[in-house]
Amino acid sequence: MGVDAPDTLNLLEVPVGDLKPGMYVAALDRPWLGTPFLMQGFFVRDQDEIDSVAEHAAIVYVDPRRQTKEKYPEAKPKARQPRYREQTSLKQEYKTAQVDLTSASETIENVFVQLKNGGNIDVDAVQTAINPLIDSVLRNSEAMASLVRMRLKGDYLYNHSLTVSVWAAIFGRHLGFDRTRLTSLALGGALIDTGMATVPDEIILATGALTPEEMTLVRKHVDDGVAYLEKSHQVDQDVIEMVATHHERHDGSGYPRGLEGVDIPVFGRIAGMIDSYDAMITTRPHAKPRSSFEAMQEISNLKDQKFQGELVEQFMQAIGLFPTGSVVELNSGEIGVVVQQNTTRRLRPKVIVVLDAQGNKHENLVVLDLSKYVKGGNNESDLWI
Image (cartoon, rainbow, N blue to C red; front, side):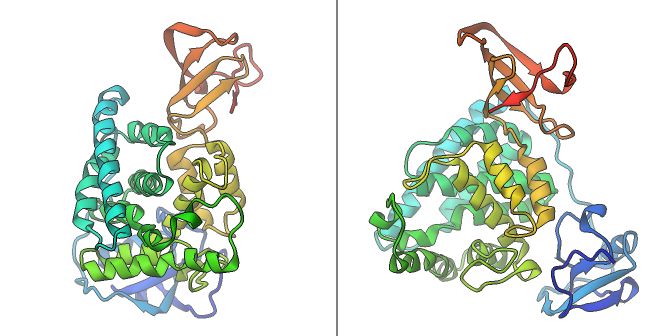
C-alpha cells in the first residue's frame, strides 16, 4: 500500500472518517511526499485538519501509544500554515544579520561559561538572543545562512549551538512552521548541547579516538542537558524532547534510548540531521570540515537509515547543495560565491564571480545565474567545489 512507516505492527488502521482530534497519525496509505504533509507523524488538531487528511488518504495508521495532552476543540477553525516570502534583499539584510549574530554568539558563550562554572541555564537570555536571528531568517534566510557558514573560528561548542539554531530556523521556515513552532525549534537547536558543559575540556578538545569511558561521559550530555532544562522550568515539551532525542536515529542505532522511526519526536528527527550536517561542515578538534556538498551527499546517503527520507529531501531543498556563502569553482576556472538558491534546479544557484581563471580579482563583480546556462551548450557552466 506504500505505507512509509518502518513498522505498522503496533499501529491501528483507522479510516479517515473515524479520526478524532488528539490522535497521532504515524503513517498514511500512500507516500508522504505525495501529500502536502511535510512531516511524517503528527497529532490531529481539529476537524479542519481531518478534512485535509481526507483529501489525500482514505486510511491512516494511528499510534495508540501516543495521545496529545492538549485538548483541541472538535471543530476549531484552523489557519493555514504561513508561507514565508523574502521581505528584504540580501544586501539589506546582511548588515542587520551580522550585528544580531554577533550579539547572539556572545550571549550563548556566556550561558555555556555560566554552566561550566556550576551555574544554572538562563533560557530567557538564549531566547532573547535568538529572536532577532529568527526575525532575520523570516525576512531573508540567505543572509543569515551565508554568515553562519563563515563563522568557522572560535570555540566549536558555542558556534555549533548558534549555527544549529540558525539552520533549524531556516529549515522551519522552509517547512512553513508557524512562529511559535519555529521559535521552539530554533531555541531547541541552541540548547541541544548544553549538557556538554559537564564534559571535561580535554575530552571535548581530544584529537584522537575516545576511550569507552570517555565516550560514556560524552553520551551522558543528553541526559544532563534535559536535566538543565527541566530544572529551569522555562521551556516547552517540544524543546525538551528535541534535546532528549537529537542523537536518536531512524534505524534505532542512536542513543540514549535506541528509538527508531516515528517513535522519535519530529523535533528530535530534525535536530539529529541538522546537528550532523553542521558538525560535518565545521572544523572540529578531531576532524577537518567537509564542503557543504560533501556533507549533503553523506546525509542523502543515510536517508531512511539514520535520517527520515522525507526530512532529508526537504532539508536539501531548504539549504541547497551549494548553500549561500559557499565558495565554488566554475568549469571555466573562475571562482565565485553562492548568493542565492534556485529551488527548482539545486545544482545551479546564483553566484557572484570574484576571481577569474588566473586568480585575479574581478574589477566589477558580476552575478551569474547558472540556471540560464544549458549543459552541453556554448555557455555550459557547471559547478565544482
